[in-house]
Every structure is written in C-alpha cells, then in structure tokens.
Image 1 (cartoon, rainbow, N blue to C red):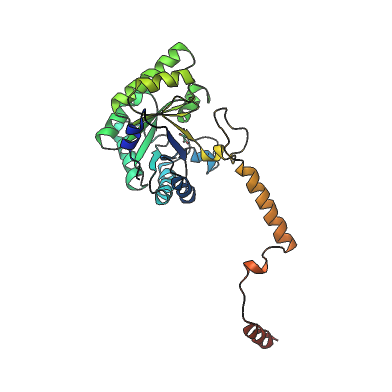
Image 2: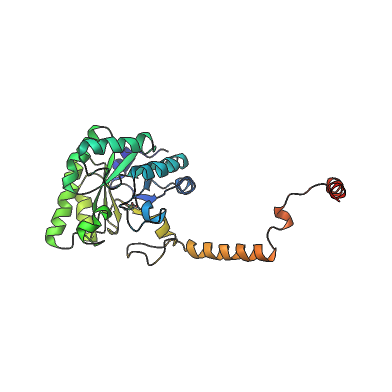
Length: 278
Ligand code: KIV
C-alpha cells in the first residue's frame, strides 16, 4: 500500500515508523520490498556516495539525479528528498521553486528541510504550495560550521527550550513530520508527546514516533567508527571485502569462470571453426 504523509500522521500513537536512506534504484527497490515506510534521499549522499567530507557541496542536480533513481525503485515507501545546502536559505520563493523541482524532476513525494523556527516562513510557503515537508531540527549538518561541529543539541536548559520551540513553530507552520537528530532522549520524548505530527529520530532515543538510519551505517559499509546512535544490523562491509578477495583470487587461479558460467557451442561448429582457422 502506498505510504503518504497522511499515513505518517495517522501512524502517530498507533505504530512506529521505520525509515532508511537510499540514493539509487537497486537499494530503493530492496528497501521498499521490505515494507520500510519512508525512504529519505538524504544529502548525506554527499559523503556516502559522492565522497565529499560534508554535505555542503551537494547540488540540486545531485539530489534530482539520485531521487529520480530512487523513485524508479520504490513503489510503496514515501520518498522524501532533502533540500541541499543553499536551496532553502534564500527565502520562501526560492525554497518553493527548488522543492518543486525535487517533486517534478526527481519524483519526490515530500521534501526535508534543515533548520529551526527561523525557517517557519519557508515551511509555511511549501505547505501553501501543497509540497509536504518534513522539518529537520536538533543537529542540522548543513549548519555544522555555525554550530561548531557535529554536536548533540539541547543538552542545556536554554538549548533544550530552543529545540522545543523549533518543533512547535515548525509543526504550526505545517510540517507533516519532524526529524530530530542528536538530541537527548528525554527532550525528544517531551517533543514527541507535545506535537501532533510524528517525530522521526536519529540519535534521539526510543520515544520518537519513528526512526531513521543511513543504510551504509546500519549495514556496516561506512568507513570508520559509526556515531554512537548507530546500531549495525549487519557487517556487510566485511562480507563484501571477503567476496572481492575471493573473486580476485578465483580470477587469478582460473577457478572463475567455471564451465557452468560459460556458453557452449556444438562440437561440430567448434571443429569446423578450428579447421577453417588453421
Ligand atoms: O541526509 C541524511 O541522510 C539525513 C539523516 C538525518 C538521515 O538527513
């Protein structure tokens, strides 16, 4: 069954929502077949797929290209596309124009926008334009430079009040869901019970209405030590390394391809060919 922003709203207090990132057709298809509720084409693709050190260089064209591939792969999951850096920072008009492209050219069904209460006018403009928008508060990686790094947000009373205020303002502006990244679990719990839209957590504890992870992190494919909030549900990076080693060795020893992986020809044709070529 097709998941929509309305499905998300109706799930609140009834069932937990499970979301994952995806950036291409194949992964989107697999994830979709498993009944995951939402696929985020995150600007994390800047690091996971394009090899940048942060999300700042990611362009609208990058997002459209990857979102279009994901939307060809996923039939049921709600496809949410991130608004990349500088696509939502120049005011409501520019934000609506860019979000419209993510829907029209990328096949997204909703967009995600990073930022707190100061982005209420953009969220309201998107909502007026009938573009479903998920707000992203707490740690917002596009602002990591301004925030002084990738830090948990809302640990002090003043900071916690700010995150709470952001959630209320963005719900009020029309966000259909609120993603909270790296906020203390008690604060996420308070926000979740205080807003009527679903909250989606990443590093925000277990009381959120749903959870999201970056697929490379949860499958053990990302390099380095994962953030504290990641649980590795599989170690596919290791499995892939072993398979690549095995392949290399098999090619080098001539073990691969075996007759089972080769195409045959009748002896008659083979003999005739050899005779003619002599
Ligand atoms: O870009 C991204 O992957 C995100 C995460 C919060 C999932 O925004």
